[in-house]
Each structure stands twice: as C-alpha cells, then as structure tokens.
Length: 389
Image 1 (cartoon, rainbow, N blue to C red):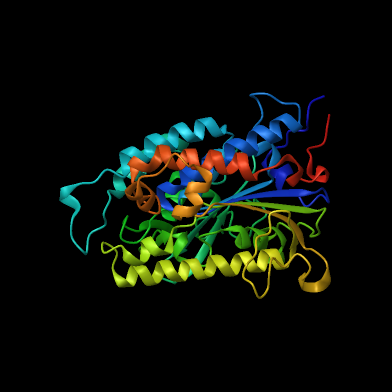
Image 2: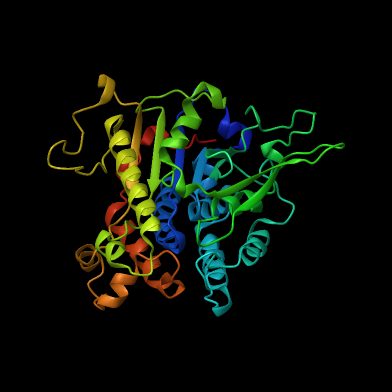
C-alpha cells in the first residue's frame, strides 16, 4: 500500500496532523558526516513505508531547516533529492570550492572564492529557482544573519509568512530570492567567504535597499533546531502547528562535535575566531539542554553530573515535542570507539577542521558508522508514520 505524498502547502498546513521537522547543523565540510547519518535515516524510513528508490525525505518531513553547510543539504533534500544525490553533489562542491590558493592569503581577505561557491550552488539548485518555487516539495528554512543589522534571518518558503511576498511598494518578498543565493548567504562564514548581498527592496526614483548577509552559524542557530521549533509553533511565523509528544517530531543532526583540545591548540586560528567558536559551542550546549528539557527523547544524553539527561525533569510537566539528536564527538577516544581502523593522530586531529577536503571520505564513513550505531527504527514513533492511501 502506498503512502500519501503531499506538496509544500499540504506539508506546511496547520491541519491537526502530526508534523515532522528535520534540522541540520552548520560545520563546514564536516557536513558530509551529516549526510552519512541521513543515509541510515532514509533507508529506515523507506523500509518502514514499504517504499523503494522513489522514497524521499521530503515526503516524510514537513519542514527541513539548515544552517550554513546544513542549508546546502537541506535545500537539496527539500527539492526532492535522494541522499545519494546530495552526497555526490556535496563531494563535488566541497572539493571545488575549498581549494587552497596562494593568491588568497592575508588577514583581511577571505580564504576562499565566493564566486566559485556561487557558481556551484547555481548548478546544484538551478540559477532561476527561487525560495518560493514549486520545485521545493516541502517546507524549508535557511538560517542566515544580516550583518548590517545584527539580526538572524530565518528565510522560509511558507506562503502564509508575513514576508514571503512583496508589498507592492518595492519590498522584495523572501519567496522571490534565488534559492542558490539564500543558501550562499547562509554559508558566508566570516574569514572563509565574503558576505552575500541581497537586495531587500527596489525603488524607481532612488537607490534600492540591500543587506549584507553572513553565515547563520554566527547567530544562536548554528544548530537550527530551536529556530525551526519557533518557526513551526510561534504565531508570528504563521505556521501554527500544535505541540505535544504525539504531535511534533524534531530530528536534529550534527556535523561531528569538534575536539576542544584541537581548537585550543590550533595556532592558525586567531584569538577572536577562537572566542567566536567557543561561544558557538556554548550556545549549542544550551540548545541541547533546552530541547531535552521540553521533550521526550530516547536519544537524550547526560548534560553533566548535576542535571543528568533531564528525562524526568520536563519544563511544564509534559513534553512539548518528541526529539531525536544524532551526532558524534570528534575526540580521539570517540573516533577510536566508532572506527578503530583510524589510528593516525594527524588525521584524527584534522577531522575537527571545517575546510579540509582530504577528510571528506573519512568524515562520511564516520557519519555512516554513527548512523548504524545510533539511529534505530524504534526511535521514530509510529504516530508519525505517513498516512496510507
């Protein structure tokens, strides 16, 4: 028996049905580890629904959110790509874009060519595909940050959203932005790529308004899980999904937690950037605490010895959602436990880097192993199975 395949508007509808959210962290080329975990999730869900190669994660998830490298993956999945297709495109993009150049040296110059990244993103999504395009099969949120105002911008393809359409007076609606450019804005990591300029409004008799956008990872939402939950449930975003353990499932995937010892001793990273990375880690930890505090979760981890895993310490006394988090530390001990064949200390130490194409194969394998070890069919409650037709 076949399962129900919905279009974008049906996925986003506030129709009382259980809803499913997938969120994908930022982390540079470590995003290929996420793809390895996604392979396992896609396979389990396809088997559960009696589907074959025609199954897409865009059929199952009503909303897919991504930040930075997670946005690259999220946009591909929302367009209906299979995970194997995302993997192939990610590998190609990563090796082309993160090519070291002696001509891009210096403290005040971005390490990598943004024009090359833009060209590759146009090839992946199509040069004319917009955020509001019908080619997106489900809901999509791309998290970026507007540098000139200092505010996070979760750009979404919700047609009911306040800023989805223009106002007829020159303001450009979010749905009109090219998809490749929205993703490019989310991936504009400071020091790695130059900011992306988006035209916010146009005027016939005066200069239009533009904004400078950088990586969503320098907002509180490098892990976009909490932002996606806010988008789905806060009235202002006009999605309006109900909450509850049997109403809302959030699946959050990391890119491998970098080894803090490696980051602390990396002499190529300046103190300012180290401080930003440390703050990002603190925010990620706080997000994990908040999400476990408000959910029922078979994957809940021990936060620390004082508060434990919060399984019996729900805020408000009842769960707001069902929550799954899959990730793996990139410390030497964790890698040894997951992949004993990886023994070279230099290789292990380099896996925390965000821009090392030579690590793509190893990181992908770690993601596959993490998925096989941690992702279980019973993690996904049957109440969230797709309706049969």
